[in-house]
Length: 501
View: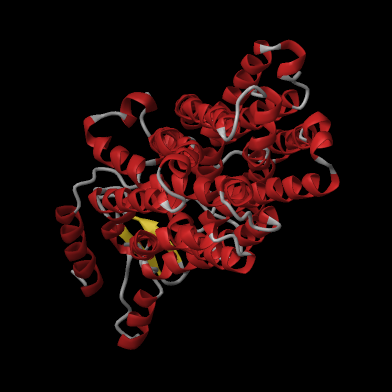
């Protein structure tokens, strides 16, 4: 027995005795990830996110106007509260959309789930721009508003996770943090576009024009998202990862497997971990614009511009950096820093924003966004790494969307109630509590990031990961040591393996 074989066998014993997992969470064998396929599929997975989340977010940015159009009899902040209640109602459909589209993605392909979700968003958004007002037909207008909003909620329930899994499965495995960051960054960009459109329409239209027709324009333009659906359908191939795993894995119902006893702890963690991002983002960047405009004694001048600039600087530009840091230092380490900072400083930042001073509000909102970015950017790869491919999309869709349903959709509604009934700083404590809950979820997860890193072997000659299954890959093909190489070179090879804790 030569030295290299002995070394590999010793590692094999250690790996199989220190991991409780029966399956690894990557490719069943090496599936090549070419630069061309990565770029094309990443663009397809990410580009649709921009318009999809523009469509979904503009409702929040026009929440006060929609309250006037569909709930005109309410006094004070009641119309805004009811408008945000409809906004949150869409989140009730997100777990449904996650289950349905997640199942489709695991069984029929990630691409098919993306196609359906895109058209399911484009059509209701366009129809929302055509809805009659309450003054025109009365309560049926409210019913139609709720129906189209629920359809939107079902769409995003599957779209974001399908986009995330599709993008990462076609990216180099040692750069999942970096590539995953673009998925949420694109969604944030769509939200930013919604904020910019909200700002522009308020500048171009007076109050009567905005209520009469101005709010409809952004919704009618939402039909453009269907262009990405057409591009995806005809020009983008299915994920090689899904094709390989579907061939190699025994057929099983992903819904049954996702809720199996072995998967429950991971599923619980994927409910807790996104709560910070879900509730924190919708409080800090969707509700906050209305807060700065309508809910404080001294409104922030150009609140929508402040909100949009903060979102761009902190949750779009910084996201790839946070993703790279998670590839280097580990998902859990970077996410922990973001959560701890938010627990400590969120209430202070909300008080600063509530002062009404424009520069102070900009500074505080950027700080909130930076703390969210340290959590949100690594979260995409963390979620994807937590489940095997045959049940991955179903599992992450269920966990993430339950979190969105519980705290994401209700965050603007609850924050408005807290300001009215407790204090202007109370939403900050709400965000801190969410950060604490998610931090607990991060540490109760079965293993750091769900990453079976004890089975990851580095192939220095191609600078790429391979995943070892006990009896399927010859040990000599996995890792060898050249006795003639300098020890320092061997150590350098291992330093190139990214931290994945």
